Image 1 (cartoon, rainbow, N blue to C red):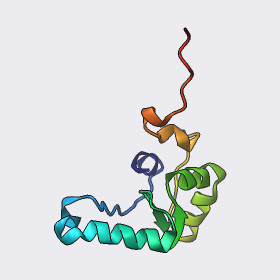
Image 2 (cartoon, rainbow, N blue to C red; image 1 turned 45 degrees about the vertical axis):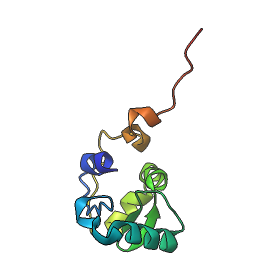
Image 3 (spheres, rainbow, N blue to C red; image 1 turned 135 degrees about the vertical axis):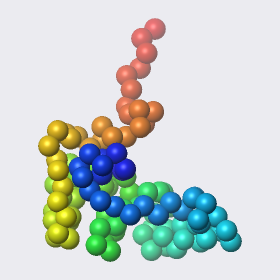
Image 4 (spheres, helix red, strand yellow; image 1 turned 120 degrees about the vertical axis):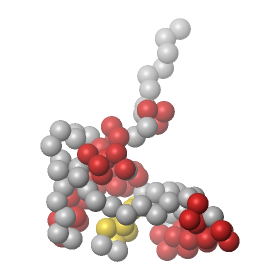
Length: 104
C-alpha cells in the first residue's frame, strides 16, 4: 500500500500496530482486535478514507484499478496521480505475485 500511495502522491497516516509505540500494555493488540470487530477483517492493512472503510490491500488495489479509490479521495479533496502506475497489483511484494510453474 505504501508504495502505491507514494507513486500516486496519496498522503496517508499509517498506524503501525506492531510498532514500538503500541507494544506497551498490548495496546496494538487491543486496537487490532477492535479494528477486526469494526470491520469484520482480521488482516492488516485496513484502509480508511474519510472515516469510510475501504478494505484491505486487495480491496484497495481493486478500488484503485476501477477508479473508485480516486473518486473517494476526490470527495475528500485529495488529488491522485495515476500516470504511469498501471495495474495496482504490480505493487505487491514479488513473493505474492503469481508465478509460472518451473519446467521439468
